[in-house]
Every structure is written in structure tokens, then in C-alpha cells.
Amino acid sequence: MRRRLARALVLPLALAAAMPALSMGFSAPVAADSVVIGGFPVEASQSPWTVALSSRDRFGGTRAGQFCGGAAVGPTTVLTAAHCLDEDVLGGPPERVRDLKVIAGRTDLLSDRGGQEIAVRRTWVNPAYDGGSNAGDFAVLTLAEPLQGDSVIGMAADGDPAYTAGETATVYGWGDISGTGEYPDGLRAARVRVLPDALCEDAYPGGMDGTYDAASMLCAGEAEGGRDACQGDSGGPLVAQGRLIGLVSWGIGCGRAGNPGVYMRVSHLMRTLGWTRASEGV
Ligand code: ARG
Image 1 (cartoon, rainbow, N blue to C red):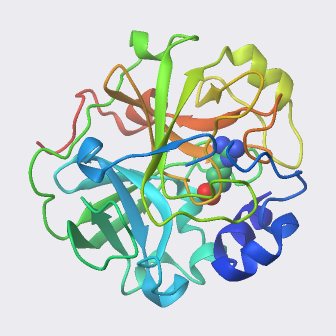
Image 2: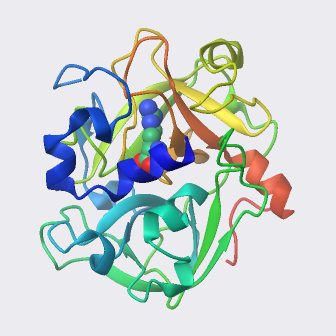
């Protein structure tokens, strides 16, 4: 799993487009209209806490080196997925990637202007992250300079009603929009629903792709498929009731019926880090 995920990310985008089977594992492509699958364009200003992780060195300059998403929870604190910083993805430890940056406040990655590009000063990858089950898929980035304005989202702690199954949630990202390696220039969002844990326990009982663990993961999408996050969205925010509940983590294919998106559960991260407040470093 670990290798397959990583490969999906490091494939140059052009190559990924030409090799859909590789870029998305074993899954059949979903309908082209079907973030983010089944999504719609949004302006960065509508979700200023959504940031792009970038390294032009590693991923090329055409889309500003974007390779994952992230969520700003403090002026200098960004959350992302642990697997985004995997050595297989970055070609070495994250400290070695000299131009590792966060891009904030920029809708269109083709434009090299607008918003902020901020260097990552420190990366902390959850040491308990398990690339086999995908449990604990989070990392904390400390930025060299603060984000401008009010671009921080509050986190939903344990017991927050935003986690209730049936809640409407929105996922944001610059990831694949069709499951065939079709990467948009602009930020997109998709509306999904928080799904019952039992659904993901059934879908992902344990196997090559990962094991659903309700304590540390969150299941969201549409039972019938269609709307979902996809490759390149990892680390990005899932928001319900205006609070951060998940980070894009994994799934089988994208938007497939019976294979909902799996997110790292933000309350699990808060518990692990001993964070009790809704935002960090404010
Ligand atoms: N692992 C992917 C990434 O690195 C995210 C996959 C999410 N998949 C899904 N069906 N929700 O970008």
C-alpha cells in the first residue's frame, strides 16, 4: 500500500495521465464529471485555510510543484498527511527537500502570483503512522512566516456534532478530478457526507490498501459513489459545520460505489498531540 500510494504521487503528471491504471491502483475510471471527483471550482478566499504543499524541485514547476494539500490550524501551523512526506514520495527525508513550501491564498496554480508562498521551517511526521493500515496519517508543518489574515480553521474535538454520520461536509483540493490523472489548475471542492463507521469497516476490513479504524479514521463520500477526494488531494481539509474534521488520507480508487474516501480523524490527532484548543499557536 505504502509503495503504491507513493508511486501514485511521484508519477510526473503527464505520465500519470498516460497511465491511468498505474496512477490509481487497480480501479476503473469513474465518469469524467464525477477535487476532487464530482466537485466544483472554488476561490482560495472561500477556504483560506486550504493550502497546497509544493516542491518545484521534486514535482516540476507547471502547477507550482503542488503534490498534496494541507489545512492551516494556526498562523504558522499546517496539518497534512504523513504519507505526503514519505521518503518514497519526496525521494528522501523532508528536511532534505530544500524548496518544500506551502502555498496559501492562491486559487490557480498555473499563475505563479497571488497569495503567499511560505517555506516550511520544520516537519513533524507522526511516528505512529503505519503505512500498512494507514493509521495515524498526519504530520505537522511549522511555517517560516505566519499566514496572512484570518486563514486558520478551528478543529473539531472529540464529541463535536460535526462528526455525526449524515452531516454534510466539504473536501477541498487540487487533486485528480476524474481518477485518470487529470489535474486541475484551480482549487476545487466536493460535498460529501459523513458516513457511518460500519460502512467503511465493511468496505475496508483489512487488506493491501489499508484497514479502517473508526477511532483514528473517518469515512465520507456518498454510499452510491460519485463525489470523493482523489490522488493529489491528500492532506487537504474535510470541513463540516465550519470546523476541520478530517484530512484526506486514502481509499480504493476515487468515487467508486462501496469504496468511500477515508480521512484521518482530526479529534484523534488532537488527542494524540494533547491539543485541547480548537486552534494552535494563536
Ligand atoms: N492517497 C491519495 C493522495 O495521496 C488520496 C486518496 C484519497 N482517495 C479517495 N478515494 N478519497 O493524494
